[in-house]
Length: 236
Image (cartoon, rainbow, N blue to C red; front, side):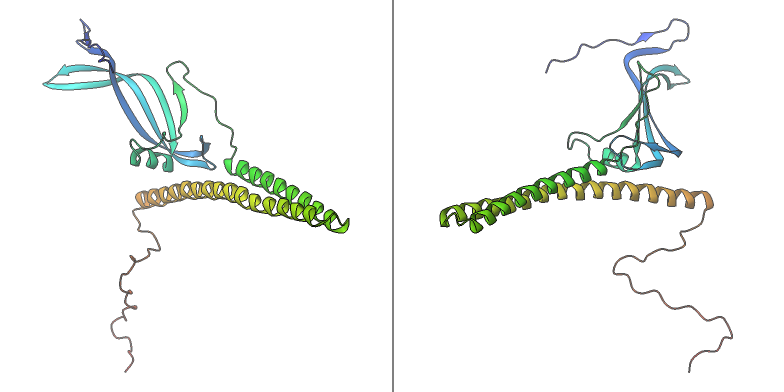
């Protein structure tokens, strides 16, 4: 891999600001409300994370570097589950799906229609089961015809083998599509859990109240019973 050529920052004669094509800042913000549709997410999200990358310029004053954001280059929006995957899976896999909201060339990209992908999984499961049923039904009919028309032992065995192969293939085909459906369902549950936890934490932050119900840690001793008030009768 060839090394990129170095370029000195340009300095504005009046303000003293330094600029360079590689200077930039990243801004992460939390968004609430609206029920937004995001890429590769089956939910409408009220809590999302936005990551904006902007050009930057630098100014030296009072013995300190001051960095100022400039033109926005790209803005992406993520669900809380997608944001968690992004920061926890660095260098792993092929990337985390995000929703592009704006680019340097297009300040406002169109919205994504809400089309849950679990519906696609369900459609594929139905298609596989329909094909499976058709193959088994055809093979069963051929076996019945071989028996009732007395086509002989060889023809009957061949029809039986076709039926057994159809049943065996149906099991492997349906298992794959069902596994895909289960995986999609688990992703929806993870997305929903992240959103619910965010709502609870935001409520606690705004009200300064602890959650009304808090489960004890696994393996912790049982909590003691209620403490009687002074002067209350007690069991002998």
